Image (cartoon, rainbow, N blue to C red; front, side, top):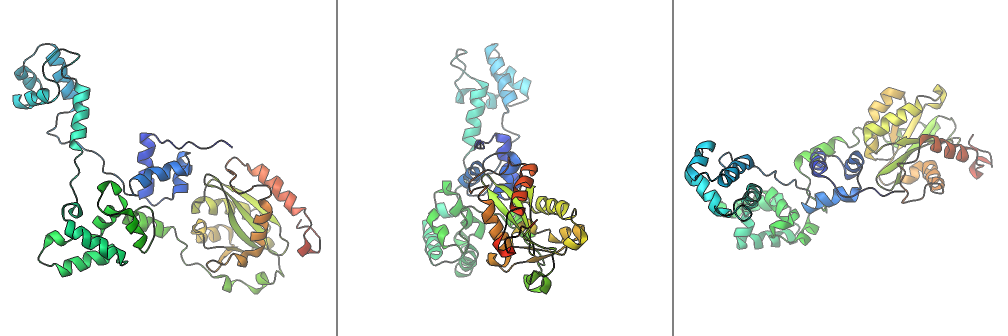
Length: 377
């Protein structure tokens, strides 16, 4: 399988940041852009998960077009005054601009608009030092409290209470987070992130966290409420489901009927809840009514839209207890059998639904000891 590219264009970098701030996962972003997750992770990781500010230019600053007018005027032998009248700028602005960037000399050694504009952008990149960088006493206090496992929010509140009359000793929690995750600030050691409650390698903004919160499974119905007929496998129509993961954020949805161990495999483009629930609903709706009774899933967010799935199929979804894969034993066993055909590390994105149907038929015509050597089919 061909590896996905890791290099992102400027437009893809911007889209990656927009999707990240909207709460999308690395897997979803990389699938949408058809790039490797490592490429997206590298982009976000270098900035600590905090989107860099978009460089802007003051209206008082000369633009590239204006600098090109200056270059053409100098080449034509025009005076600073004449060029200033063309641009409606003070003469002093033109003279300083030219002196800073080569002066009025021969064409190949004098003023060049493109070079002058690039220098202006570079000179404007003078980020203001944060308070931790200018106050070593405050920086030492913050670093010490972090080693005591204080959260940035606790630390910020304590500073305001301890130094109520000294604004120079006040900090926001976000400033502390940014100093930890954006290492180019050179203030707090990255090792201090190990003392945070959540050991994320990148900062997630409030907007991102809120978006992720909405993707969690809401109002899950516990497996303990599943009908007894499903537990004792007495009646067909109760299914177990899961996602089989491959390389490059590729997945296959697996469905196993509890009584017969009958298998259905469903191709999904990604693990986004909308994608998975729609693909499962299309498959379930093709079943006879007596084979559509319930579906048991784990706590993965791919079924966060379980209510929409139930409305579309009239099949109730029950969720396993956290960290209890044994409650979907038939599905776990089937996933193990599938690894004979789709080993770990294989990119599953190129596998077609027709190929999945062939593998499902092989499993359904394979004798099982638990069925007294009968087959699921």
